[in-house]
Figure 1 (cartoon, helix red, strand yellow):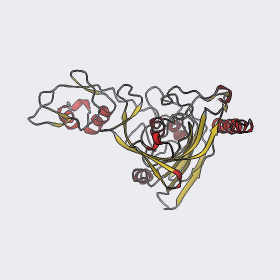
Figure 2 (tube, helix red, strand yellow):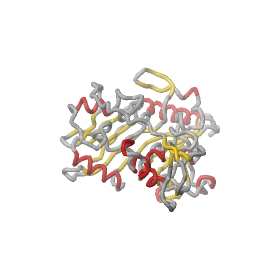
Figure 3 (cartoon, rainbow, N blue to C red):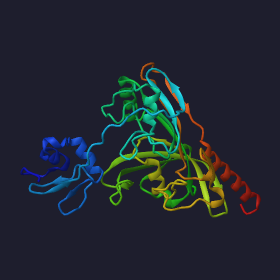
Figure 4 (cartoon, rainbow, N blue to C red):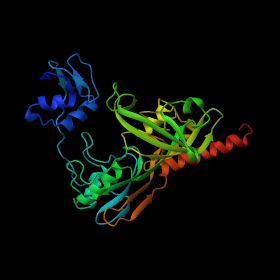
Length: 347
């Protein structure tokens, strides 16, 4: 129950009211609120830590036990792009989670990196995430940097926080975003920049109906900025159109690119969460994977470029990862179908 005499911020009130044994810091309470774990006695869920609450109100906080650290080394092959005494850059395959979490305690990138480094990674203050500087989604492939030392972790984290890190993603979406489309350019969240670049600026937060998803929100959440440019357009049959996109991240929110493309009405090909059930033409969806040939089973998104300043030497480092096999096959199929459509005389 909220005590006192004047309205206060919800996160502050709950932190003061929580019993000491609950280990509910204000930061943890803010995370619980954003994750939809705090509600009014009536059952109404709130998602904004700065919600005003009043004396005498009763609030319900659903607290799940903190996960037991399970960061055991696993002998898993890694595609290491660069390594020195301070850091390493890894090319993560699609399907691999970055760090352990309830339900996926083993087989993660972090388990593999711990084995490779003999357990020597930067202490980040979180026993489940030693060395982790940033993340990409499980089913997004591409480049990540991992810190071996505490000083490297601090420096790299500051570079990410100040948007000094170059991150370019390559993806394929349904439809072709066009600067001449008034529906697209009329969105308040969209602005046009030089060089054919679109800039998308929104707030994002947890989806009220599904805590595993994110949503574009208006009056709360966290600021998210994505820039992108169309680098290829494909017509399959005159109706089915697709685009190859280069994305630059200014911020790094959960599911940011995937969510922004859904928001624009151009979801990523193969996205099982934000794709809106859109299907890729069946005759084009067979791609290669480590398990052989089969349908594309993940969002068509790859972290292809990563650039940052080395925390010790001050030298600028930039790394590139080419499209993996499944996305190469996807692009090849689109190019072939587009050529066939044009050659038919109907393009």
